[in-house]
Image (cartoon, rainbow, N blue to C red; front, side):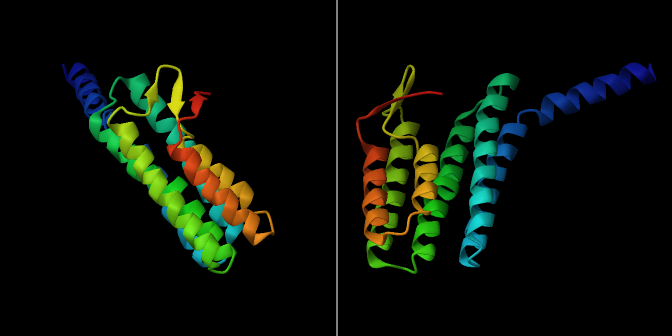
Length: 179
């Protein structure tokens, strides 16, 4: 009797906990984005970039784990978007702003990029930007990667222009296939 009860308790625990695993991964995405921001403000840009990449790993895992466990939820979708704004919107924009010493063009580009990212994710959450095989507009994760690459350029005007172009890409009507 005791052995069966022990197995039942483990099964109940697993069934209860499994619905929280994807959300924990999503929150690790947000936490990694915050750590990236902290490193960026300390002028440790490579560590900031490393934690943005760690956010990508958590962002990839959360949705896949949710589908695998059969526990995807409306809350998970919202948490994912909020985490993505931190990790792939604010963190890459701040990387450029701080790295280019608060240049006005970069500040404007960064603000436009974050605003476009928030708008894009809100539209995605209500179903406007979802396509069967992809997305309408550049996903914010990919936009964040582009800004990381742009951060290695030295021409401030080119960086500012590319940041604004990237912001437009987030809210554009470009059809992007899922990987």
